[in-house]
Image (cartoon, rainbow, N blue to C red; front, side):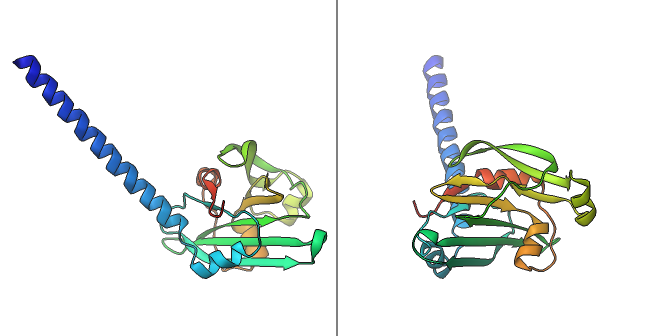
Length: 198
């Protein structure tokens, strides 16, 4: 009788644990889906109009929202140039920003920064890094004393994608003043990239 009672109690306990784990998983998936779905229908349509796969982060730190989406198409036929950028911002308690950008041409090897963190991308594979810190080249460090942050260019489907931090976001997209997210958060965001239009 005691053994049967213990077995029933264990079974009920396992069922409760499974139910709790399932509820937690559904909650996490719902949060991720909500954050991924921050793109408005018009922004999605603009990105889809480029005719390429668009990766967006499934993980976005709490409080961040999409500040702007920019798309550009130049030329025609085989010389067609495509670019886009999705700028994310956090306003409070301090302004932070990062951008997911992409192009199909014209990339080069970026200058070296002082530190690196490895990245394992679900859709782009391994062997990529997040680069952060000050420039190792003395001339560049003198010209741009502020630390920078960006991933390697991630290659797939004829496009090159990357995450850039505050310094390049401010310079390239003329955004309001903002600061970098932490390198570990940048890796987490970049590793979560998934296509919303497979």
